[in-house]
Amino acid sequence: MDTLSYKTISANKATVKKEWVVVDATNQYLGRMGSKVAKLLRGKYKPEFTPHVDCGDNVIIVNAEKAVLTGNKWNNRIYHTFSGYPGGQKDVTPAQLKAKGEDRLFKKVVKGMLPKNKLGDKLLGNLYVYAGNKHKHEAQQPKTLDINSLK
Image 1 (spheres, rainbow, N blue to C red):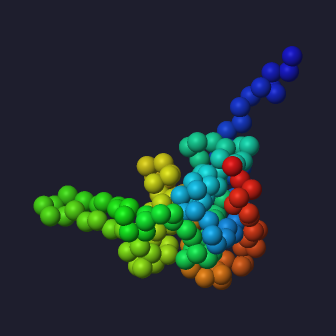
Image 2 (image 1 turned 45 degrees about the vertical axis):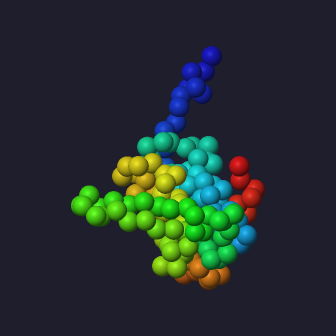
């Protein structure tokens, strides 16, 4: 029996192949799309996934203003923050976040689906969100990905 075939390969910074991916948010549900983007950032769709290594892709989201929330979630859902000081509790709705910028809403949604440690912060840095159809990452030659084809 060849025991070398049973060794687990652990990816590291030198062996990881990171790619650039463009995802179109037109008529996509925000939460479902956010979970798939989080998996792309994490690298869970790759066979060489290693939990403690940044082996995910760089993800560019275009047409972020066309993402959909069902029902009355634009105004009824509330995100809470607390500064730690008396009277420092703030509430914000998705509509208010969207008014401040498309990237804030997407980053808030995806950040909640990533690990809560240094790796999660680094992975969130690989996410780029743009309101229109244009982005400034053409030099990286990103490939277009249909987000509905992923599980």
